[in-house]
Image (cartoon, rainbow, N blue to C red; front, side, top):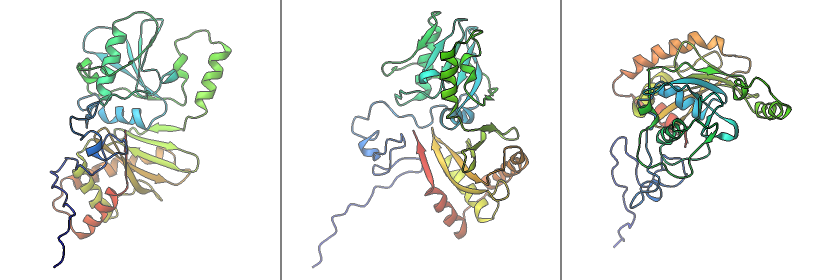
Length: 309
C-alpha cells in the first residue's frame, strides 16, 4: 500500500493577502511567515500602502525609489513654516532645518521602521518643534502618531526634477571649495531624468547603455496586471518605436511598469504616446475576464516584478 504524501497543501490565500511561504512584501527577502507574518508580528509593523492619501502619492513613491534629484513644496495643515520635500539630502539626512527656519524633508534615508509615511511624519514634527539649524532625524521607531499625509494638505505636488543636487546649497549665498567639491562628487552619480507632462508619475531616465520609462500607477495590483495583460496580448503595450515593457517594480503598495527604450529616444517624444497609452489602459481596466492569451501574458508580467522596500 502506497504511503500517503506528507506534503502539506498550501492554505488558500484570499485575494490581496500574502501567503506564509510567499516573499514578504517588505522586501526583506524572507518568507512572510519568517518576517512580518511571524507569530507576534515582526517589528516594525509593515504597512502595505503607506503613502495612500498623500498628495501626488504616485510621484512621492517615484521620488523615494526611482528619481535621483527632485524637490516639491509641501503645504502644512497647520502653521506657516516653509517645508520642502526632496528626494535626497546631504548625507541622506531625514530632515534639515535651514538658517532661514525653512524645513527640508528627505525621502531617501538610511532608516526604515516599517511605515515610511509615519517616519516622515515624525521627522517633520521634530523639525517643526525647533528653530535651531541642523539635521533632524530618528534614532528609533517613532511609535504611534501622524503620518506625513496627516500633516500636509493639497491634492497635487509641484515637482521640479533637477539635473543634480545644486538645490542642497541654493539658499547659501557664499559657497566654499569644500561645498563645491562635495556637490561635484554627488552629481557624478546622477542619471539624467525627466518627468513627463502628459501623464502623472512617469519618469524617463538615461542610464547610459539604455533609456527607460518608469511609471508609478495608482491602480490596484490585480486590476492593473489584468489591464496590462490585455494590452500586451493586443500588441498595444509599446510606448515608443522600439520600446518594450520589460517588467515592473512593486513599491509601497503600487506597481511601476518599466519600459526599455532605444538609446536616443529622449523624453519629449514620449509625451503623446504616453497619453495615448493612458487612455488605452483606462479602457483595458474596464475589461472582463481574461482569455487564454491574456492569462498567459499576465503570468509573464507577474513573473517580472521586483519588490522595492
